[in-house]
Amino acid sequence: MIVIGGGLAGLAAGVALAESGWRVRLFEQRPFLGGRATSYVLPDGEHVDNCQHVTLGCCTNLADFYARVGSADKIKFFDRLFFLDPQGRRGEIQAGIFPAPFHMTGSFAAFAPLTLRDKLSIARAMLDILRTQGKPADLEESGGLSMFEWLSRRGQTPGAIERFWRVVLVSALDEELDRTDARFGVDVFWKAFLSNRTGYRMGVPAVPLANLYAGCKMEIERRGGEVVLRAPVRGLKIENGEIAGVRFDEGKEETADSYVFAVPHTALAELLPESVKQADPSLANLDKIKVSPITGVHFWFDRQVMKEPFVTLLDTTTQWVFNKTALYGDSNGASRSVQGGQYLQLVISASYDLLQKPRQEIIDLCLNEVRHAFPAARQAELVKATVIKEAAATFSPEPGVDRWRPKQESSVRGLFLAGDWTATGWPATMEGAVRSGYLAAEAVLRSNGTPRKFLQPDLEPDGFVGMWIGKSAQEKN
Ligand SMILES: Cc1cc2nc3c(=O)[nH]c(=O)nc-3n(C[C@H](O)[C@H](O)[C@H](O)COP(=O)(O)OP(=O)(O)OC[C@H]3O[C@@H](n4cnc5c(N)ncnc54)[C@H](O)[C@@H]3O)c2cc1C
Image 1: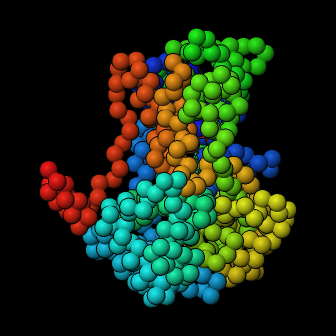
Image 2: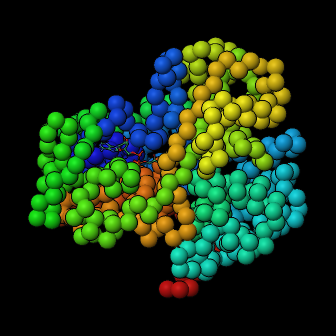
Image 3: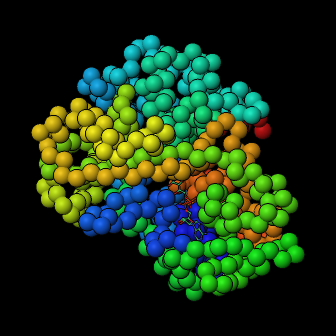
């Protein structure tokens, strides 16, 4: 078995197949594992994540994957989400004493950055999601419906859109509301905020991202396989409609019984021969899947400037500020260069406007916002800063995008696909990537006549929602 790509999709497929007794050889072009969800060392010795990554309680497959590879204890979960607007009004979202779907009612009612009108309009839309169990009828409109249109149809106030829906969804889905399929947007609220009490809990790695994957290599090697880094695949050999090998530099070739390609869709489109794209309509449209950017800004201050582990800023270019010093704790030495100082990582999703801006301009803009939000930062010295722009951070969840996402099993015998962009039903997330890897492993095992399940179920609805769904299921039977 050959797996190409050492991102989460390839690692999940590789680990699942190794556990099923296959000898897995995984080839990754870069010198480290983790793909987009990784970290590296800057020339001055500082460990930085490619960008801050977070997970949610509803990401059941990612949790399963971390548990399999011994990394579950490196993720810290938080029950409280903090928000701050430019007027200094703070808001917190957390589950209170009531069962789902009313568990957030208390913190939502007290949420200062929203007006009563905003809240009533949000409550109405939430009721619609709840009533339809996350599947409002208009989501099925052909070609897809944008989230912005879905919200407009439900009379959402400008404040509700800007300070609530946009804040949650642009970070969760990396796209503006008018370019997001409402199906993804509604799903976020159903799975993370309404159907159960724990789906919204935010998990943040307490170590640099690359430190989460050592267990994958061990698991693959323990079963007789290997992980080969700095090994870019340059082409596929197709013979008689089946894949007969992969080509590397210097004319090297490797062969196997089956191949899982877990590379980004743009890379696969370049690798696939034209004949394959023409023969398989699901592989002919990869170029229709667009991408959207994320920008990460890293600040090292000479002193502590914020207390919270992370804060969402409202009405600013900066969307999230993560307090890496607090998240890493002492053990990981948050920074080599600012002992006693503080390392912050800022995230701006769907950062189209920043792509062309010079780095210094982005630093100045974000520094101003941080100094406005956290008064202690006004006296602090910014020791150093860096900006990491990822122009193709995720695939864009635009309306109707699912029709271009191929299944994990292809029409070419022996060729399987994985990657957050394949058909998982999920947006481009670590959870989506792991799901795709598990689905690819299941497809390989099925085609080999040894089926096995890896995909984990979603979180069970709980509280009143669980009772209500259980009752309506009974009535249907
Ligand atoms: C800036 C940023 C922030 C993000 N934030 C979050 C977040 O907070 N939460 C979340 O859930 N998701 C987040 N994501 C999305 C998440 O990182 C991805 O959905 C996920 O990591 C994709 O995994 P993958 O394995 O499908 O693809 P990738 O991670 O892209 O892995 C593909 C791998 O294939 C390798 N490869 C490519 N071509 C070849 C070749 N020819 N030969 C060999 N190897 C090859 C690549 O080097 C790479 O390692 C973020 C992404 C970015 C970029």
